[in-house]
Length: 342
Image (cartoon, rainbow, N blue to C red; front, top):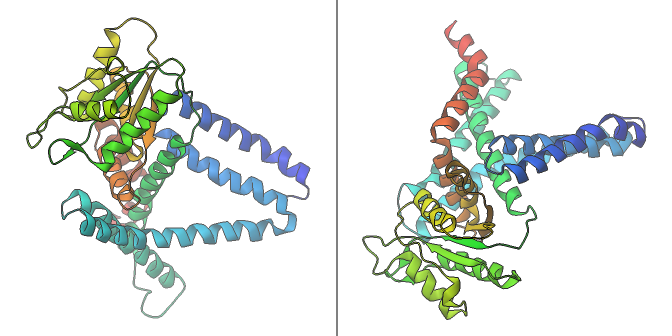
């Protein structure tokens, strides 16, 4: 591909550096911007090309190996999603949210089978030549939406590992359902444990704001349950302010922002939720004007894929994202649709 290391650095190096610098700067400046996820995918592909340039005559082999790894990963995706969906139903319950992973796995699997059949048709295999543009339309559809989900997943992981300061004045903890109406679930205790970890690392101790109202099936508010847990783990009561009126993520943020705005002093804020939830939290925080850093708490490995897909659906259904995603879809599939109906 390139005759020398120097040529590779001179030709691809500036592009490599520019794309990564732009990706990191935009991620730090506006982590809730979905364009960052697309930019990250571009940065990964540029990195493959840049690294391939150091293999000299073996660059083609290196890129082929990368391509094969990507293809294997893509074909494993529906298998893993279907397995995860079955595990979710077994460990949790049968409901629409828990069926997301299973449904998406089947959808992607059908699309990948359609891709293989279409390639076989192009290759002249007997019995597959009749597969036409409708099959190609299915391939394009699955590919487009799979790329949207994949970019969201990779970016959600990426922002979790971006370095951030550990000096905060406020730490907001997002609520979640309680076990037995008054005890913290493992999901919620992980969030509170992360807040305790941050509290202990800050030289000047921040104010912790447990946020969450009382559901119809709960004996106390989620905020009160979190406060009880914080007190049991040595956090002084004067460092805790309850926000116990909210019922949604956006209300969590609005009410917590009102508490912070009503107080004097610096307002450096950390926002803590489960790692799959951080992107949407930051998006909502930007919407209401809350300047904060998102920090994710861990979740059970089997729970993470379905939860992240559910978050993607919630983001996808927001008005602006839905409109732009559908415009992109029509542009992407437009040539095939034209061929079908012309």
